[in-house]
Image (cartoon, rainbow, N blue to C red):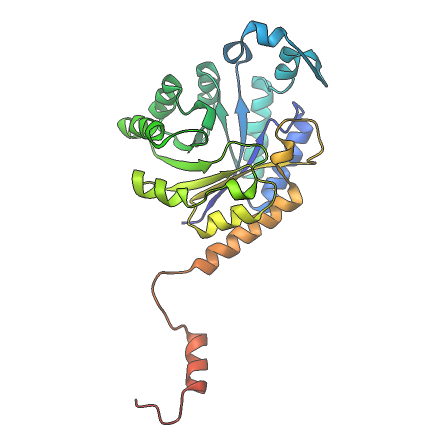
Length: 279
């Protein structure tokens, strides 16, 4: 089965549909399978005190203005839905509260996502699992026991899922990736395991593909110097296109576990075989 490649737009769109469409276009041109967003109901996720606190941003001087500037309303998501359907690419999003998940479930999309930060939000997990959409579950910052609780919820509901190994630092140093954990999770939970990466380069994600990742998710951006907390841990479109090509090459190179002598190799063997080799 082909590795499912996700271009994580997240909040790198900066609340701008033109930027969003350019990122979608870039993901389509790269050959990605899906793009992903993040959805929050601001007053559910943050306290009033926090929202009133100061923060300079392109949208104003408070945390509320910054957070609201990064959120699309229904009209915005309807345009995203229309545009992705036009371009032939899936979209989905990680919700950070129950109302946001209800909002996402009102769209006819194929996938759900559990962000690492939401892995222990059990009411949210129950809501997602009850919908029975194929769900990508990121596991950054959490123990095997906490992952087990989440897996139990999805299996209770009969909801298809796969885990995604993740290290929740932005950006993540390559030496912190600990990619062998993918095998540990695969063996422990008997499910597919992908990689949700926050590294700067491409090598770690290519290695994840070689180690059997079922899905690979990377943040994408038009320019890593743009405003935004996730931009530095993102890949620009040109780099994302190279990454997809490299992953697809790795898939071809992995081949089959069966030892084979192909037609091309057989002809070489015939030419190089010693004359007196017993038949």
